[in-house]
Image (cartoon, rainbow, N blue to C red; front, side):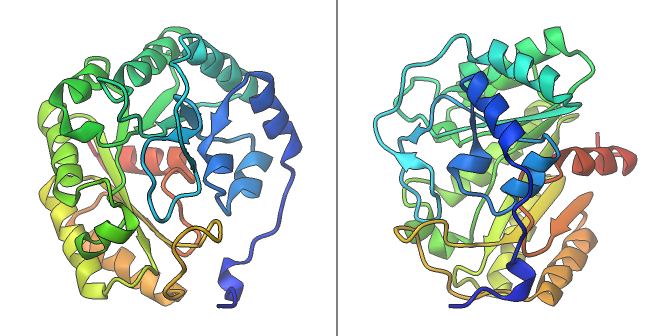
Length: 285
């Protein structure tokens, strides 16, 4: 299926950001997930740090991150994220991870350690975490919320009907419940989620996901086009036109989302600081 013109991007300067990440022995989801916006973000010295190694214990149909035996927890990783963030001049730091179902806490303790390190060394920086579902464990969630980030992101990814193909080891209701629990336990945290389109979902199914997210008091939403990262991943069912993304954005705002980024090349962590700043202006607390 040929790539439509609105999805074609230009490669920009990558090497400085890549070299910096390598110098601190850090991973980015930008690289591991083969994000199409990598060139744009790296040229601006922006990256989303991916902690807990680069091997995931799950094997989602859409994701390019390697599946395999994970690495031991690196206790020095939070400090290196702080040093890299300072060198990059970041005012807003996004931390995500592979899914670590092998760990008793799912890796929540490492997220918490990163938040503590950033709060101590960079007290004015904004912090967003994009976490896995922790198998629904409330103690793991509590570990992160004991020293909360500014934004808690957990992506719903797709519609429930497609979960067996797209997220076979995940559960739609479990993800919705996680977002609901974050808001219930820490009402001042901004909650955020993301959806991919172009996997064979219907517009009605997307609207129902939006309704479920709003019922869970989710504040911010990102909607972007699924693009097959490697040949072993699910094929693209269809490319959605920009006008449909604008339609979704308008409806989502009517539903009460405080900020919505909806366009073909939108990704969950893209322009995260701008989303946070706009949400603050819109009075999300």
